[in-house]
Length: 289
Image 1 (cartoon, rainbow, N blue to C red):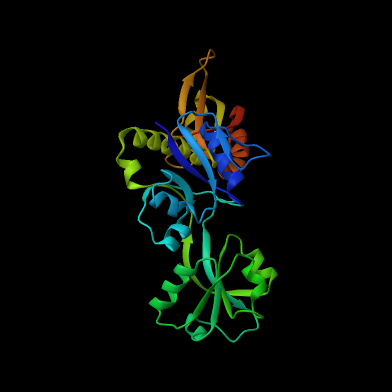
Image 2 (cartoon, rainbow, N blue to C red; image 1 turned 180 degrees about the vertical axis):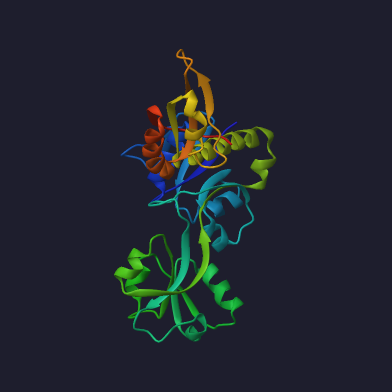
């Protein structure tokens, strides 16, 4: 069994390779080739632009792939979604597909763009959006760098934004959000119905999701005096149940817990002041819920 897997080329490529590395797969690309290799004989990876991956999945040229929800919606293709993977090129936040205009323009609502020109890589998505609002616009395909086209060449653009910094740098403002998008692990129906491929896809989903969970979590170990154990553990966030183990010194116990990374910077000083010792914070590779 060989699973043909589409890997997003471009801005998501390194983040995707990093996620797979944490999940247990080592992807590499030769400096002389765009064809990646992986240390798993059951996977045949293919580097593709994210917007192409849904199309190649739909026509059966690849079995599965990682691509944005935005591109799936733009293609209008019915693929099987295995799981959501909340990662992107900069943050773990979703990206937004937005309608933007120049700050000095008179446009404040989508309806103001009736009869105007809009540029986007998301032509089909943008056309459906304006059709749903009964607004007559001309939507032009753009090969990217849409921001520089407003207002000299077009009246508005539909683009994806993660932080909004590029829009602000080009003196643009958002007047509507078409959708929010995260990376999705998807496959075609034929691959999902094939027992061997489905087994492999489910294994990938478990480990990729585990790596995603671990990215925001850390482990914390500590030693606690028994006589103040309850008071110290009460400092932990609710629903966080630590593992308690006995120590050679019967007046002490060891505790171990998994926490959100942002919680630890506040908790460690509080735990230390309350009497915990031997506090050790450590990273996690995978956390399977």
